Image (tube, rainbow, N blue to C red; front, top):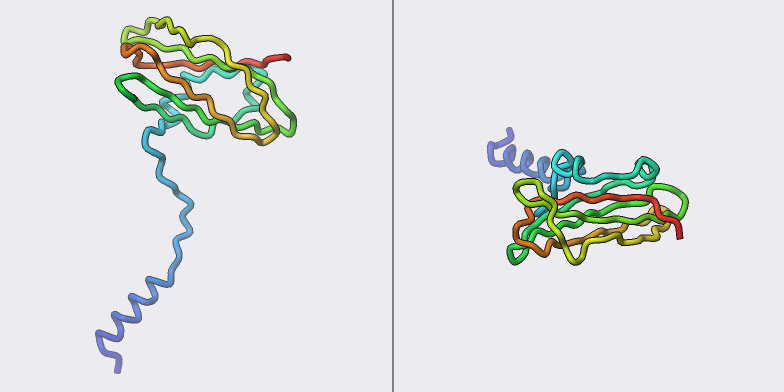
Length: 136
């Protein structure tokens, strides 16, 4: 006859031997849901099937808004493109920034790259990124 202690021990061992098959990873701190960033990233129609957005992070550092967009070239060809980040206040007005302008990128096949920018005005509460093809 099996005692309750033996039965509980066998059950506990059986539970310990099970492996989780879940691939779920919790989002990193500051990671935005796609619904939060989808309208803020404007990919040129030429790049919609070339780039994949892996993750968008947003935080405040020293009172200033900061954003990091992780992208990937999903083609088998080198891509040349340019990006710009614009900052907006609570009323939706675009804020001038001394570091605004286009940044050029050369991205190899299946390469992940990061666009990282910080607002210089504490009034910034939102941002928009534009991505266009670029020829060198």
